[in-house]
Length: 294
Image (cartoon, rainbow, N blue to C red):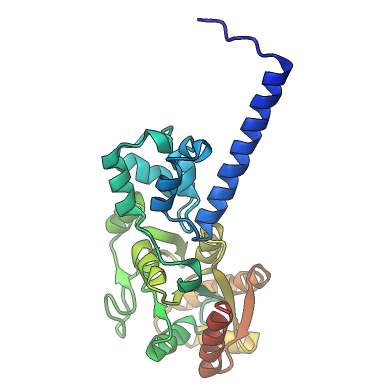
């Protein structure tokens, strides 16, 4: 192995300064990508004249996009047969084209829709609020996938996307979900692409999901606004849960225990709304989304 050349103190100082500058450029670039200020095509253009960006690892770049994260970034590269060690300057034209199809240029951050996550204890009325909000046409309301059986009043594609356990497993493997979690003996997940498409079109999006799912979204999408829906009183929540004819007595008892644990999670959320009147909650959610645009 050839011996590396010895550097003078001046050369070592210059190399350290160059390395520090490159790290700062890459950090600033990733921050601009996450905020939506820089698109993938803009990064490719900058890489032609900026060595620090040209030498950025592609996986780091993809992780910077809102809602992506390390797992999806690696899965995308594997699916496109791009090495995890590949740098921007080493991408071929076909690889760049494939990445552009995966991460098309979005509209400016100020024009993007706002992502609001509505969660709370079971029986608090999340589904009722989401249905009322959908009817106002002020939000695009996501339809979750689930492995539980449909209730007699529910319809596939309207209330939920019903999947078998095998279908849900394949969806997880294919990185289909923005988040997913197990709840009350079934699994629930939010299809990723419809949410991203709606936000990129400037639509405000509501996810009505459980608390664990809300935490996943916040971890991968820091700009998401988390809203906790509380009952007017604990007695009211107990009354609602005990009045569910579709649940067995054992299931209702389990839900009451779980509801106590869920109520304790409210401090994690950005906003808390009391569901004493559905119309009031809907109005508050619409105002909240509008306030984030100003």
